[in-house]
Amino acid sequence: MPQVLTHHQLLEIAGEFGTPLYVYHAERITEQYQRLRAAFRETDATFFYACKALTNINVLRHIKSIGCNADCSSINEVKLALLAGFEPSKVLYTSNNIAFSEIEAAVSLGVHVNIDSLSNLRKFGERYGHSYPVGIRLRPNIMAGGNLKISTGHNKSKFGIPVEDIDQVLDIVKEKNLHIRTLHIHTGSEIKDVEVFAKGIEVLFNLVKHFPELEVIDLGGGFKVPYAPGEEGTDVELLGKSVKAEFEAIAKIYGRRLQVWFEPGKFLVSEAGYFLVQVNVLKQTGDTCFAGVNSGLNHLIRPMFYGSYHHIENISNASGVPEPYHVVGNICETDTFAEDRMIAEIREDDYLVFYNAGAYGFEMASNYNSRFKPAEVLVKDNKARLIRRRDTMEDILATQVVLED
Ligand code: LLP
Image 1: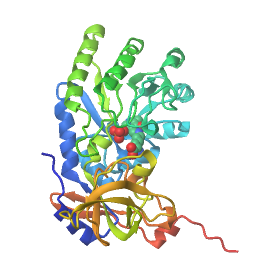
Image 2 (image 1 turned 180 degrees about the vertical axis):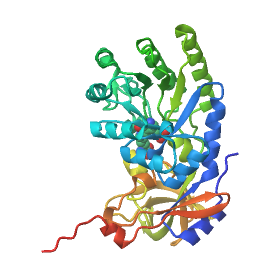
Image 3 (image 1 turned 90 degrees about the vertical axis):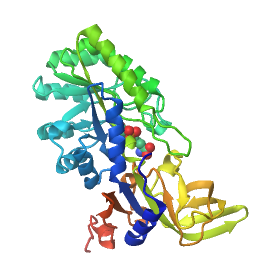
Image 4 (image 1 turned 180 degrees about the horizontal axis):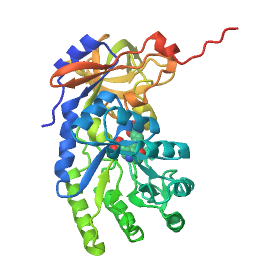
């Protein structure tokens, strides 16, 4: 049984630290990592946590402490990962549409870079030639992922170098004598179907022969976790078996053993996160009962942006009779977390919990309406500790330049 924080623990934490509040459970992250390790134990697999999902430095340090590497999507994330103590050799920077100066900065920090455009690949060749092993991010033209906004590998996607441009890639590699160490794809987020990874492997395997120095096939992230009750996530154990078989086949054909890299974000941190809010106002209009909470799309945008489902429970009255509620925020536009959701009877001031709030929750939060972002707490060894204080008015003004005229 996965480790969970109980209603009782969450209520205590809400009372101690206030709401809105993100709470992360370190042991649950560890558990997910161990599940991946076990599923891939017979393959030369390395996992790079896609830290865009949740970058609090204490979470990064925990992830480092359990032996996982880091995948970054900006130079600032690279800097955070290094600050958290990851060795540069354990840090991966998978870029998309970035200025070449960021690639130069990443190289000067000694991290591995996956390049996603022909122009940056050419510039890389001009600047570094064979001296710095590099990766190529390809677009495999595979449709995958939970919805179009988080689907990244299809044939209309902005991500990666389209695989049909491989001849141009090879010309640059040859002309600049590039040292290609990794081939990368990332087809999307919330990929349940193990077959999608097999398709990606097939696309890359067909290219292996062109890259004699290739060491790694990097399949990106995107493992699905269950969000709604009864929903199933990616069967990573099955995926482990199929990847093992496919990599053994390639070893036979080419006489080369390749490593496989993955970049899981949601899989590691989604279920470890809880978002706690309090009900400000109950409003009954016609058939609808709105439960207006002290949060909104400024704190958890996934439901409004992607139509994502987050399971919600009333932890102040768990044994109350379930009723249908529209759970809404306090932002000046429609910010509906859930419609006609059956939740144990809600009273004003009750605390609600949103599950699966570890990934892309706080990380996508903003100060819209000049509201404060939530605070963050990490529970580890049964101790709950503040890892980000709540904003103050000073924070809201901190980067503004007040003109004197
Ligand atoms: N690697 C690359 C290159 C990525 O772009 C991503 C996610 C990942 C790995 C990790 O994917 P994951 O394992 O977390 O599915 N904000 C959206 C998700 C955006 C994902 C962006 N890229 C959401 O809340 O669903």
